[in-house]
Every structure is written in C-alpha cells, then in structure tokens.
Image (cartoon, rainbow, N blue to C red; front, side):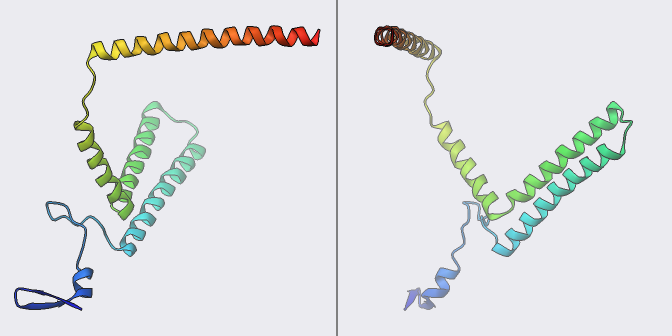
Length: 152
C-alpha cells in the first residue's frame, strides 16, 4: 500500500512513522521513551539528593542559625522545583502541561455567577440544609421513642 501525493509515492508505513505530535508553533510534544526514562531518573536522583542532603545537614549541624535554616529551606525548595521542571520534560510531564493549557482555555469559557446569584444560591442551600437537618432530628426523636417503648 502506498500513498500518492503530487507525483511522489510514499509508503504508508513511512508516512505513519513521521507523524509526531506537535503544537501549532511546530514544537514537538513528545520525546522518545529512552529520553523520557533518563529525565525521570534525573528527577528522582535530584529528589533523593535533596532529601539526603537535608537529612545529612540537619543531623550533623547541631548549631543552626536562622539564616542557615532559611538557606537550607530555600535550597530544598529549589531542588524540588528543579526536579519538577525536569519531570515536566518527560512524556507524562508534557501531557500534563498540555492538559493544563487546555483546562485553562476551558476555564476562560466558564460563565461565572454574579455576586447576587452566588449569595442567593448560598442562602437557598443553607435553608435546605436546615430543613433536612430538622427533619432528621425529628426522625431521630421519633425512632428513639419507639425504641424506648419496646425496650422498657
């Protein structure tokens, strides 16, 4: 089987192999599984190094000033951020970024209620909860009296 396009014959298999997910800008969305595995390994190593470094520093440095603690916390946060960014370079991370962009686009399409609508809806829910709780309270009292009638 082959496809013909403007006097050129391209085998169908090669045409399918060349399909790569890209954005409108032409940026490649996915990387090879090997590169993705390498990025995951790097991300886990960074997280492990941050955890080990924080543990090692806290167990061996008894007198810690406020500035040293602040610097240690900032290094831990920076390490986790770097690991997160490396994880976003994987296939799953790129899919997550793509999903977040699509979600944001859909979120912009939402018609949010006005303040008056939100207050009125909240009041209706509050009244409904009060009515249901009163009904359940009355049912509890009736069932309690019925049980007392049979047990005494």
